[in-house]
Image (cartoon, rainbow, N blue to C red):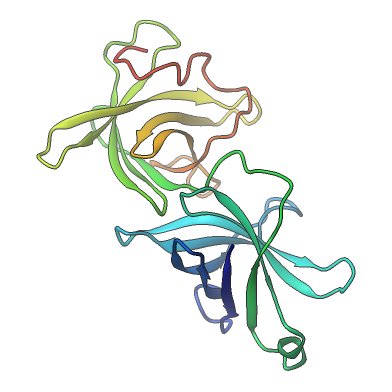
Length: 242
């Protein structure tokens, strides 16, 4: 079960809404930040929070909605804090609507469907030398900083283009995954697909460039979506070559 509150901020605030979500396992402060809509059903907001490392991470998305029977506005949120996805709605009481208050109550939503991937935040930046990348990937349960180093053992097209490495507490490099360069058959844009072994299991993500990033050195990490464009053996294993 989930509960919480959400409050509309003044128009000059960086986040349009701030609030709290509570369960028997966590109490998390959240923000709803407006995002550019690509289509009518694209999310209106990114839901963000601060993880244990002090980094702001995206933990979900939210939509402005209107009740089919009541006609009252509400906010639908799809959230994953690393314990499994859940759906909640932020609604207003009759008193809050009457006084035009910015206060909402968060209630759990019973859903018949399941999300296929959780919410992840991360970024990759191309380094100036050695055809390498530096980046991080994070959610509310883990925060990994890593580098992508060119795979000098690649001999076949399906072999990874990069190995993913992190450092131990003593600075020893540890391989935690593989990455492949790819090109979208739909847009022709280059991206990377990554397989990373996190403390909570293997994770598939893509590193893509949005319109503002295109042509630059920075990529945004997003949850993996199986579009059929992935390298044939991407994710086949974490061995040095394949």
